[in-house]
Length: 375
Image 1: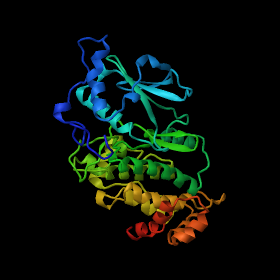
Image 2: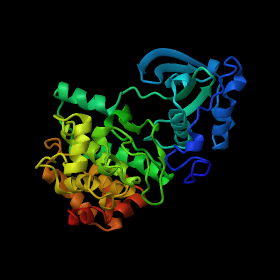
Image 3: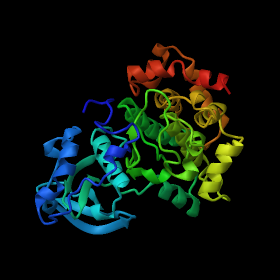
Image 4: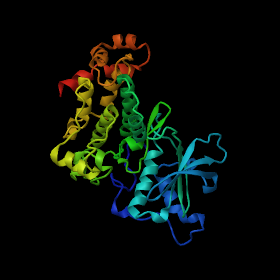
């Protein structure tokens, strides 16, 4: 279906009562026709015929992980030259009706994503015993893994332009998701995968259509430690809940720490929602990066920037020439970004030597100062 439209016959949250049913027939488990209702629903929602494979075409290899409803395997697909894929194997019989609806939403939403910073959903198969979702394999693990490795190995901190470049990749992924009319709702380091130097957003299991105005969507959706306060408080919310989570991720990338590490995930969520607690940004962090992070986790969602509005400032920070003697938080390293952010488009174009598109140049011409002014 066209980007931005609502899922057919499904609420903005994907959980209307008339769809709270398991879409698989159980009367003839050996018959391929048994899965027809699920496949036909997906096709009606715009998933093309070419997207579906037979189960036998997807060869499962090494088991890479498991969850409540299935497993993840290194995989190959018959007739494909590339072997860098994984298959998420889901057992339909383990799914409650609400989970089956979320699976349908995940397929319908994820298959529309086409961005270098989003894990590519390639194909799928479905039969009464299992559903296999095939996506690209990211060999660098998750951002959560990378942060833990950096701490345990005492790796040197990244320069400001490198870490903001990584933040920028996540922001661009969010901009794509929101631009298509969706919201992710489970943004956290464990759902950001790494392939080489590229960061990729993954796991659209809780994604839904972005409402035109804040709506009463399912409360307490996502992961407690990274959850926006309005979601925890059962209040109406919109895609700005993703921006709160993005702010926390940026803070974790900056500090290599877990937000509120002494608290359990649910206690951390209550501290944020009921006491307006936020992690402390390091004192030596540049004023403008501090402002960006604090605006992302503002108590009122209306005060948070959109995903598109953070791309410009982060682009400016990421393209500042690095100083090998300075690390994250060094104010002098960020000073050139302030200069460029106040420069006219022509000066930016000359300074960056073709590294930026005209759209990015026009965006950078006016962002950082406005964020700082609102602190």
